[in-house]
Amino acid sequence: MSFLGYVFMQRALIAGALIGAGAGTVGVYVVLRGFSFIGAGIAHAAFGGVAIAFLVGMDPLLGALVFSLLVAWGIAYTSRRAAIKEEVAVGVLFATSMALGIFLLSFIRGPRVDLLGYLFGNILAVSSRDLVLSFVLAGVVFLAVLFLYKEFLFIVFDPGMAEVAGFPVGLLQGALLSLVALTVVLSLRVVGAVLVAALLVIPAATAYQLVRDFHKMVFLSACIGVLEVIGGLIISFYLDTPSGPTIVLLSASLFGLVLLFRKGTR
Amino acid sequence: MDFGGHPVLEDITFSAAAGEFVSVVGPNGAGKTTLLKVILGLIRPRRGEVQVFGVPPWKLGKQRARIGYVPQVEEVDPRFPLRVLDVVLMGRYGALGLGRRPGAADRHAAVEALKLVGIAHLAGKPLGELSGGQRQRVFVARALAVKPELLLLDEPTTGIDPAASESFYELLRRIQKTGVTVIMVTHDVGVISRYVDKVACLNRRLVVHGRPEEVMADAALAEMYGCAALFFHHGRAPHMVVRPHSELREGRR
Image (cartoon, rainbow over all chains, first blue to last red; front, side, top):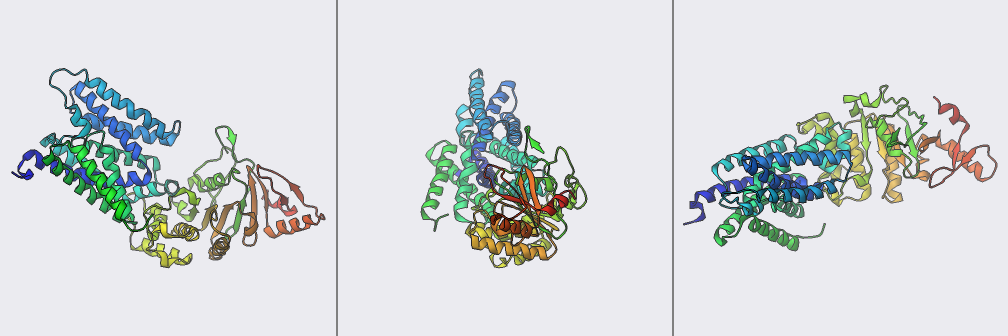
């Protein structure tokens, strides 16, 4: 029986396509703005949110959503106020929310929580309810990028000038980080909190090596993202490996190949 | 005007008439960029009065589009994957407002601006493939894409070789001739004097405000020890400046 015959696999593949396209698109802004570390920070915060949600009996993905959005706006606010360096704020947050997540989960009795699944992704984990949430999250991400395409480009390329032109740079920055948060939650089931950040970076970094036009980079990065997540899921199905690491390793291999064979240097 | 207790700018009295080419010179940390930000309305002075087009700059609102701004080159990543035309189109973003994409009219204005700065043939090139001088022209074109009446430039010739700087100043002169007021901040003291109408010397305080030929003439006289001009040193990189007699009256205007 081919992988397409399994319902869990169909769900994972549909979610995977949404994840790849979402992470590929948002990743372009992450890579060009140098937000990679922030992406990792938000992903770890999402894991803390999962743990809190388990304890209070909430849907874990909703917990992750609330927590990572809070952190996204916290980072956006910190970076505007410059009371502490953005990097330091993320560094503290990164480990603290991860520690909080594992600490809290150790209190949970009864049916074991799928800790590894939330950390590294589980191909079996996408329920039909998760799939609905995936469509909502991906929908919000795509609509926001469609509506604020030029604004996000502007604040990523030249925030000073965007401010001069009268754009609310702080709010747009917060909105962009919120999209990172939504993408993290979208990817949590399949890729896992530890490895989501890689998905926000590698497809866009691969596309960056291949084209020098922003609009083409967005399109190409989304395509590469879909290809890598779907490809990784299929490999993970046949090799019976955790889906997150498989996807990331496939993505990194493709990135390495592009680095080796691309013409010229940047 | 101060940040965290340390005044960055004080006692600034400064005016530029419509259609003038004014250069503000001064060492690093003199507050040149701050002065531009005040003119742009991004920073409000604690005391005193600023007027651009007859109103305080922070009240310009939509009128902000009448100002074109060329920030320091180092502020953007030259390897950013964008084509020249896309960069120039950004000049139109402010007037478009949230959520609206640039259309044919915006493209037309962007191409016109590129023609004005003489690099229309580079419209399709990635930013990363241009020389420093060409890239600077792209940012001038971006500022011109809104057809501004006032053009502000922050250290536009940093990292550009002298020959390219010369032709860049020629370009600014041409732009000025179309009726645009040009205010340029720079630490390039020598070359600018041949092109500008007025030089203002800034180091937290605005020291000289006069026509360059007066400044230069007095300086030449001074070298022969025969002048009545006033010399003094200021700043971490001391340099001699001249206070022409006319400036004392003009500066208070």
